[in-house]
Image: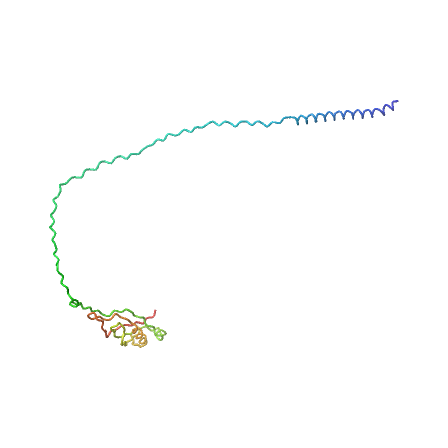
Length: 212
């Protein structure tokens, strides 16, 4: 009998424990369901915002502006100029009238007096001479004196060499040809005698040959 009761007691204990656990689980489940239903049916309201703080009105007072005017001191009145007695004016002489001739006498042309015009020849064109090749190769410098005639139209005629010298003063003919060639190209304003161009003979000119 005792052996049978020992076998039954463990089974009863396990059943009681299971029943108790199920009861607790049912109670916990019921509690959760109740809380969930309360949350669902609860009314959610937006939080009421606090009104913004009131800012006191600030009134800015207008500053008083004091106007200071700088008045310059009035200048002292100018001293009156001393009055002088009027000086007597000098009497000017009366203007004289110029009498012009009322008659004009005609003079035919050809009776006027001619003023003679005389002038010497004036050079207009003077071309530079070419340097002779032989003198250039030897480095010789010199000059040539040429005599010629200036015609009434201002050209040169009859040129001839009077003398030719090197730089040391020794006679030479190295520059004669080029000197004559340059003189033939000269142009002058001819000599005037009583306003008429005439020939001028015996004109001399010095043609210089110098290395640069």
